[in-house]
Length: 586
Image (cartoon, one colour):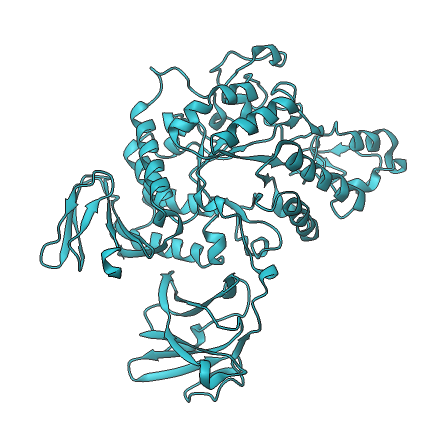
């Protein structure tokens, strides 16, 4: 055994409370190096009466390591533990004080989970596991009220650029709620709605005013109320990292310089403020001089922004916030932000925009979720570009799953594209077969899926601004077949709890093979998803012990032959099989 590959930590994603009664443990070994990992657990105050040895499950692998996981429910909510690892005739034990070839005397030197305090348990809102989000860029979704169009509005369908406005508004969203209900989504994420000069509104001028080109507060209240009547949650975008150069406090700094009472609201390096050779004398989003960065450690700034967060939760019964450029704001601010928001709405869903490993924000004291761009990157590089084989894809996804605690994985914000990336269909070179494979994976994977407006009817576009095209409402120009496919997969996810709550595991993912099989399983149902990510027809086989499988989409029985299933698949095709585990319980 390669002992140097062993790893276990006593916090974060390695040892954590999943709920007020359950502790999850993870242990790492070198890939394909050991036969089994066992967890030895017990109560240090009654070890002999509570000791238990339980095999852990190998739940994921990456290029270098295997990851083992176990779930434990200690009677008294506390637990000491160690690990026993076997490989052939060799056995070693791992405890907090080190690695030994002789069984250590418990519980001295063992790891310790001192106590599960319910108040410390990271508990994202339960509804987020059931949510299927639809992202709306308001200016481009639907123009329901031409009377509030901004000056120089462009005809609907004009090619998007960085500055033009198309007239989309909140009334347009209200008018299309029946459309969204028919599609099947049950949550909406709006990019910013507050007053700002740009079409994207990430340069906020007034945080307590809906931009007049979208409507007003009363219209937003009506929209949220109508959404709630239809079972649709609503999340808004908050830009607390920076504001517009026309924000009142920054205007004052520009006019009065270091004598402004708001001078410390921003990170100013030199007065008078200026932009020289493209570099502002104050910190900004990127180097955009029109978007000065807040000093969120300043108590007045902090109170101002937290009041904004509370105001909209209470004013319109908001269901959560998506937080722009969240990784560039201090953690002290976000910890207070979470407390304020959860006090206003304990079920609020908080999503941070972080493009990299986000474990430091997902420990229960800051965010519930993050925009999972690493997911979209890994999925698209497998299903679209063909840069990796099934083996590497499974390794990459295993690595992502092990980044976070289980409750974070269950509500992580998964997407194929957004307003900040090229459209999924464009990335797929307009090959709908590849896009459908990615959609199937999105809708059958662990986490909270999100659809970017218009993807369901075949909207295309490269990187910003092309990805922000107007929604296509002409039925003759919509891809109705693609719409029906999205609707089919959304309905499948909504009808089957296992696709939202079940465990995930790859069953087949081999080197130099673009075909994969993975499963979702819970106490009631078992799904097998078969995917042929090649341009030729194929037949895939997998050993199976029961004969009660059905096609999850057609309901047709699928019978094994001599203990295995043989599934023919079209080029870039898939098959989803399901069986009930009810009979197994009898």
